Image 1 (cartoon, rainbow, N blue to C red):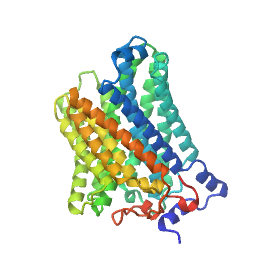
Image 2 (cartoon, helix red, strand yellow):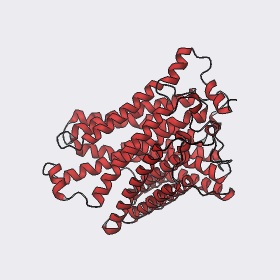
Image 3 (spheres, rainbow, N blue to C red):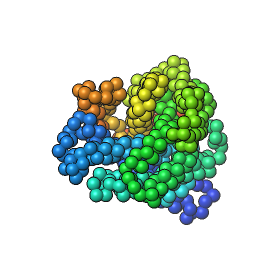
Image 4 (cartoon, rainbow, N blue to C red):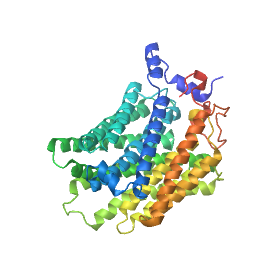
Length: 467
């Protein structure tokens, strides 16, 4: 007998001609594309993490950098540092949080059969994967300027298409009886991220195109553009992270999220307000027209929604009965990093630390989502002890990296982060080599109330369409 979730997913394609229904189910599949995004994020995270460890721990001597950089060791160091940032933000965090988990679970949580444009979904992943390859080629001295611009332009094309697809899917493909206010916080976070990408990415693409047309020192202009993108980048990372952590909090606290509508309102304010603040900075930056009151108002637009979300999470944890688990550990780590980022933003010259804390919080949210949904995606259970080692190494390395930026503690933190990457990679390989076990549809128990937990684990197993 089909479950409620199966009925909704099957019913989403009712009334379509057989050709359309077949193309919607067989043109890539949202689960397959989501898995591809997550695989790309894992590879990019390993590459970016190893680049960071090599630079921080001094594993690349001056002579090696000079040889790779054609005699310009400082320029090569700068290129590697830039590639690390691109890998972690453009190809690891955003593809995992938005492309991976978004493609996998937004259709399941809204009762849709697939994304609105399945073929476009696959093409967008190909564009993002191609931009990842071009970014790696940009490490070369000969092709660095051209490859850097081409990689970011292709990334803009892929993410813009994915964002449009996400908005169209949520607005048009959800179950007929699901109102917008009934959607889970995770879905709200995904669609608001998509709307913000639709607003931000064309501006970034236009700036990159102007760099190509103007000529001159490409790296100097590229650095300016990437610094300008740092404003919306914080909101783009925080929105899906909050959606995932809210889902995890509901499950392991055993009660619905307290202040749910307030959390959704906070996400809307963060999306719209973050875009407005960024637009203001673009037009007024360097003109000397902003005063302290403007800066305080801009900071309040970002901090107030985060404080509201943290309050809702805290109230939910105090009201319910918290169950210790790997996803909950990562979710708590994300919340602690958001608190630390808020404190750092009030300190003089602390904005660099705020961005670092935001990226780390996004990484913690990504791992929270991975450990939360890995059984639903793959039908496999990760080794608990390996997951605990991964969590402890990452927490320790993150604390040392944020608190001390130089010297032996910073090197030790970088080494611990590198070790955590190796543990995670080994755990993924071992888990994939294992055969699928018999996992319950709702293996987290009573706290998991959303629609995907009514479907078998892995999703699609009963259809013979294994993601």
